[in-house]
Image (cartoon, rainbow, N blue to C red; front, side, top):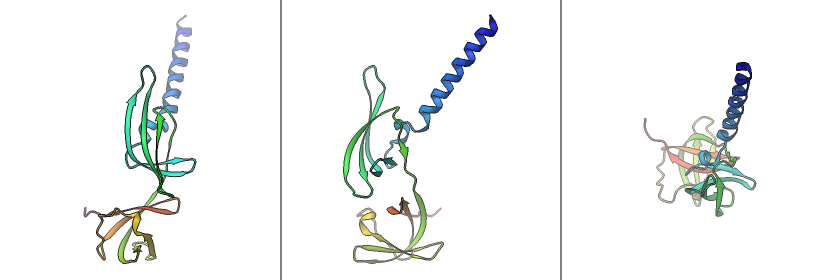
Length: 153
């Protein structure tokens, strides 16, 4: 009798563990955060704004304002809290600002010493670029998506 109870307990624990593992990997409630990049069928999107809420008896939801990093088109999408969402991967590299040329910013890669040309609208409008300063360049799927000043450590 105790062996049967133990087997039922083991089955119950095993089913709960797989349930937790499945829903904790890429749940929208964890991935859809302000500033994150997420993958949707039409490409990577930046999360610009979020609102979280809870439905009556159902689970929660995340309403997000998203921006396609290729087209800059913005739209709103609502995710259920347990919906699977994939976070887009991106790379950060350091580069020195060299000069501005029309609508293009020119950087020198700190490791390969290659010249990198990035459209000005990739950076925030209020960013002031200084010759020789080091910046972090963010790149997702071959496109530069952001520029940040490297802070002194």
